Length: 419
Image 1 (tube, rainbow, N blue to C red):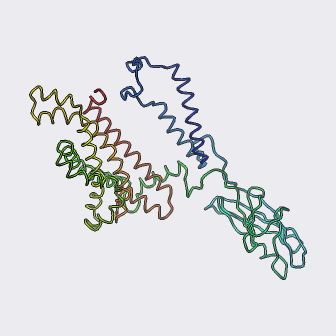
Image 2: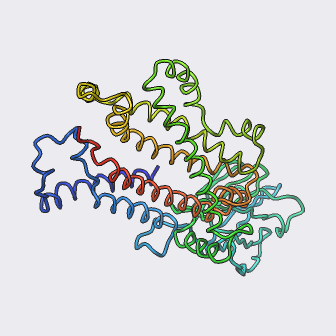
Image 3: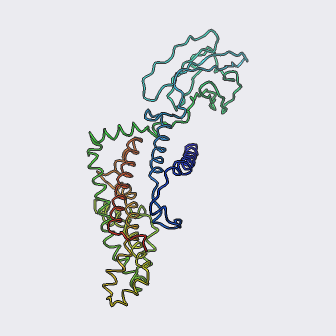
């Protein structure tokens, strides 16, 4: 929640600074700026590149700040690491009390550490030492060295009364008394994320170079990504090859619309993940089953996109073509197809995104190579850096494909948004 609030605050501040300050000093004087009506005009909306840069930098800085990265200049308060101590008051059955000190050394998880040294003291409650990892907690077995014939009871921490199940704040942490009366010390965690939940950017980059050089699960990184791309492109290709003609048929024929509309509308909301058991039964766990799953993920989207494109053709253009003596084939070729391409490209971009999201699930089914397989295997061993690396690579590749499709759309459909 804190990260979200900071992100929203940065968004608002950047918007005010850029739009109210910098943009007024660098206003454009081009065709778009001369338009009197821009709200609702898609051709007048252009992505603000400065906003895109600030957005990416903000995410990176927040990521680094809350993981203690050395790549960013600011950091959120991190976990306490170092030496600290607290005292406890022990009480024997006869009511006699004595104080002792617990010398604590907090270290980074995975590092070798030498425990602190401390004199035992003179009373029946002896001083103790404790080593605990950052973001962790550990019990202080005070009864192991106390000189008492019976089990002593801890009644106070740093002079603050405490009972089983209660917690008190101490220097650089807190102490909770377990139900059996054993103190449990938890060092301050700060605001930074533990690496097992969110590793730093340099840890992810380091893992990327490691896997790129040595591979993972008996395959190189390029092989993992290549197999995922092959499955996605193959599934999308077959989905488009069947979905687009089917969409055209549903948009042009009432019989096709009546026949296939219940099927399409029934299958459209069914998530591809729900089809995995059925696909395994039908096609097995080989490559064919994975491609079929991605094919089904793209099929209904492309069908609806093509049908919507046909339905959205301006009727006056169709009448104009007929008035000029055009045949049905000529109307289809020169009017319907060109005017439906913008919707088809939009559907293709959506379908490709869905396929990329589904490939992770598709590769759960006995895959030996693939980005999704790499992510799922890493998650079983809590290798969060590999998981995040795979997610970023899938996102970057998907975004790259989307950019290529936008370029192809501008090249093949230059009339989009121009009536």
